[in-house]
Image 1 (cartoon, rainbow, N blue to C red):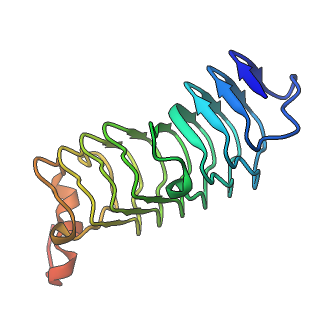
Image 2 (cartoon, rainbow, N blue to C red; image 1 turned 90 degrees about the vertical axis):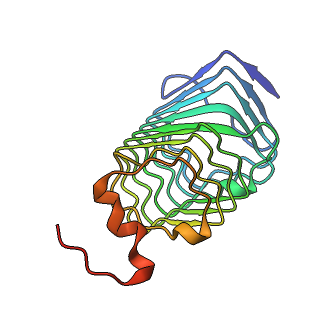
Image 3 (spheres, rainbow, N blue to C red; image 1 turned 120 degrees about the vertical axis):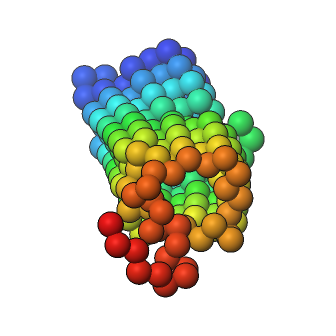
Length: 188
């Protein structure tokens, strides 16, 4: 079924079936969709606000220009999404234990997000903004982090030898996390 320019919230009836659905310019607000199966669905130019999306299944799901605002997205594997046209932005979201594997996240925005133990592996993150994000125990491996802005985020730890960092932005507070592999003692 196709849905266009609709609002799904506590007052409106949410679809009974989420697998293989088409959503364009839709808004999802204050819904508890934890552990929902979104396999094969397409979300184009959609917005999720104040939703619980913990442990949702995204196998072959298309996320094209999708914004998540104040959502819980813990334990979500974005690496299972359809790679074609994949573009997402996050604001004030809980993305703890998420996985971004082989994703193109060019110029994506992570603003005021918790990304504790998130895993970024083999991602294209050129020009991505991590603004005021908690990156405690987040792992960055084999990524292109050129022009990424980490300057206001905290608890960052990554190995510069495992990632491309050309013109990436960091704060002085980030430096200890960039030097962890050298087992140096840095006094502040």
